Length: 402
Image 1 (tube, rainbow, N blue to C red):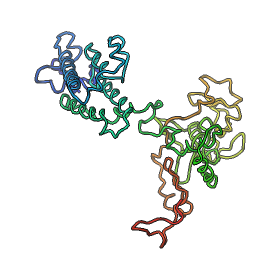
Image 2 (image 1 turned 90 degrees about the vertical axis):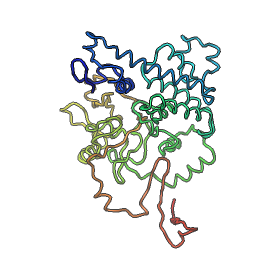
Image 3 (image 1 turned 180 degrees about the vertical axis):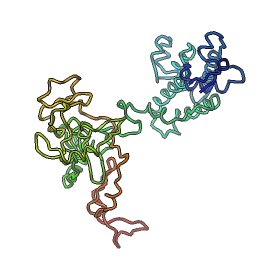
Image 4 (image 1 turned 135 degrees about the vertical axis):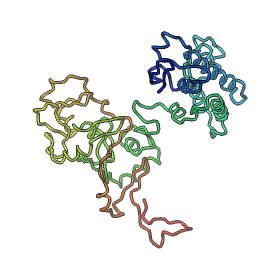
């Protein structure tokens, strides 16, 4: 917080309309060349500190831009062919990521009110060019330009983190909403679920090596069972979806979890899944009669409970606000209905383990032959055993590892 020099009241920087960048600049100028006064005091006694802070920011950005223009390592980023043909500002300002000319034009016209916005535009240009250069980053021309730019920013604004990976990485790939930048996007080639989806697609052309992998996979049956619907293996994205880990040798389909009455989705963390599994052991499905029925009608007086896929087969209604009504109470619909591809969960979600202890289960131990390990696309079907034949050239090779 900051204290007003006139009324002595303490105020939040954001309440004064200050970005993080402007606040850092103000902190370094206070007591030296300007005096801070809050918004009410500034209306009565204009101090001009806002203009001073903006001017320091602008002069610093101009210093960085001049350094970029004079650096030989950045000359290939200054102007693209498109901007050379049409350098007009009204056209150029709509472009982004092509070169540094639009950035320079925006700076000259006073469109940058924060260092962060300027930094993001420069990063976008460099990342776009790095995509087109197929050498190691340190050998790429733009890789050298990146180092020069970071050094310039550190010289002018030493407090600013110009190497923040979140800024550089977020331009590398477009992500679905609410997804963490470093997460695997399902379905992705780097995920076992994506490989399973390819095997299910009859129209997907496969090479001989892929066909061989499919033949080998036939000898391995997915023994993972959903703790809610009791079905084995992954399901299609618009059905029950992929299996999520909920404990030692325990799994649950993503949609079986998300549509359970007590489960809440908080920024990708599925809360109370274990409570749903516990309750499901006592609840039988209205359609199939099996336990694990945790998808219930939202009408308080209705006792109908279903598995997720049984509910869909029974013409239950799923609303976007996660409310479910059985076919008898469809007239209570009060929101947009979820259907078809709307059930696909194409973002990173995981089961929250806060307060869940698995120590007792792990202490029981497992036989090595029954252990299966899945990490992304890596699937260890058998750990194997160590014997006298395992030692070879100073390394140990488990016999039977697969």
